[in-house]
Amino acid sequence: RNKERGTGAVPCCLCLLFCLGCVTGWSDQKRELLACQCWNLLDFLWVTTNMAAAAAQKLKICIAGGGNAAHVLVGLLASRGHDVNIFAPFADESEKWEAAREAGITVHLPGGVDVHGHFQRVSKRAEDVVSSCDITLLPIPAFAVPSTLESIAGCLKHGSIVGALPGSGGFHFAADRIIHQRHNRRDVVLFGSNQLPLNCRFLEYAREAHCLSIKKSVHIATMPSESIHHVTSTLNDMLHPIHFASLPHMVAACLYPANQVIHPSRMYDEFEHWTPGVTYDEPPLFYAGFTESTIGIADKISKELCSLAQAVENAALEQKCQSPAFASSVLHMHDAMKIYYGDIIEDHGKDFLNCFTKNYGYTGLMMPMHKRDDGKFEPDFHHRYFTEDIPNGLCLAKGIADIVNEPVPFITRIITWAQGHMKKQYVVDGKLQGRDLGETGSPQRWGVFNIRDLIEGVVHEDP
Image (cartoon, rainbow, N blue to C red; front, side, top):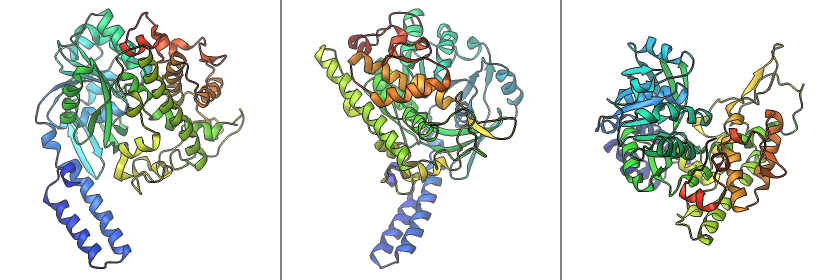
C-alpha cells in the first residue's frame, strides 16, 4: 500500500504500529481507532507529498469551459507549475476569469490541503488560448462538446492531445467527425474518460473551489488506440495521484458504469410515481438517501450494460471486425465504485449500498430540486442528472443496444419515464428513433447504424 501511495517512511511506521497492536492483544476498539488515524494521515500525505513529482514535466494546458471541474483543474494544474490557459466562450465567463486572473484561484483539496494557482490567459476566442497548448481538456457537459470542438479544431497545435473529462457521452463520435474528418487533423490524439476524476464545486466563481473527493482510478480510451500509453502517461504525470488506466475502445468508456447508472437510479427511485403538485419541504439527501430499492435499480442497469458489452463483442466477432475485449473491460457498478473511491468508503465498498451512503466523497450532497415561489420544492427535470445522463448516457447505451439487437428493458423503461417529465421524445415503439434523437450522444445521431462502423469509428453524417 505504501509503495502505491509513494509517501515515505511515516505510513510504514504507522502500519508497523498497527500490526504490533494486532499481535499484542489490543482491543478491537483501539485497533479501529488507530486504523482510522493511519488512513487519515495516509490520505493527507497522499495528496501533499506527490505534488512536486506531478509537475516534473511542465506542460502548456488549455481548460475549456468554466464549470466546477474547470475551476479545480485550473487551480490544481497551475499550482503544479504548468502554464494554464482557459477557453471560456459562454456568456460572461471570460470576463469573470479575467477579473480574477491577478489574484489567482484557491482550491481546497481533501485532507485539509489548499493549493493556489495563477493561470496565464483566458479568452472567448480559441485561437488566443489553444494554439500553443500541448493538451486541451474539456471538462464540459456533452451537449457543449460539438460546438467547443468546432471552435478549437482549426487552431490546435500539431500533435497535441484533446480529451473530454468525462468522454463517455459520445465524445469520440463528435471528435472524429469534427477534428479528424471535417478539419483533417489526423495528427491530433483524442481521448475520453469513463468518469470525471474529481467531485467538486466552485465556491466563488474564478477565485475559489472545493474538491470534495479525488477518484483513485479513472479509465480512458484513445483514438488512435495506439496512443493509449502516451496519453495515460501524460495524464498520470499531470494529475497524480489519480491513476489513469486504459480501456480497449471508446465504446467501452461509453458503457462503463458511472453517472448514467448512479443518477438515474436515485432519481427514478425517488420520483417514479411523482405527479405535478406534489412538493417537498426541503430537498432530500441524494447519496445518503440511497436505499436497497435504489441499489436494486442500479444493479439492473449495471447488468444490462455488462450484457450489452458482451453482445457488442459477440457481434463484432461474428462480423469479423477487429474487436477488443469489451466484456471484460466493462464492470458492474459495485466493482467500479470500489475502483473509483476505494478507502474513502467506510467498509472499502464491501457492501454496495455503503458505496453511496457511507462514501466520504458524497457527504452532504442534496437532491437537485426546483424551489417554488411558495418555498416548497419539486423535482428539477432540467438538471444535468436528466439532461446529461439520460440523452448522453442511457440513450447512448440504448442506441448501441439497437445496433446489436440486445434487449435492455430496464434502461428503456427509465428513458421512457424520464422523457415524459423532460418533454422529450427519444424512444418510440421500443427503439431509439424519437424526434429528439439529434440531442443524444447515440451512434445513430452520427450516422452509425451497424457494428462495423461502431467498432471502426466510422461517422457518416453531420448531426
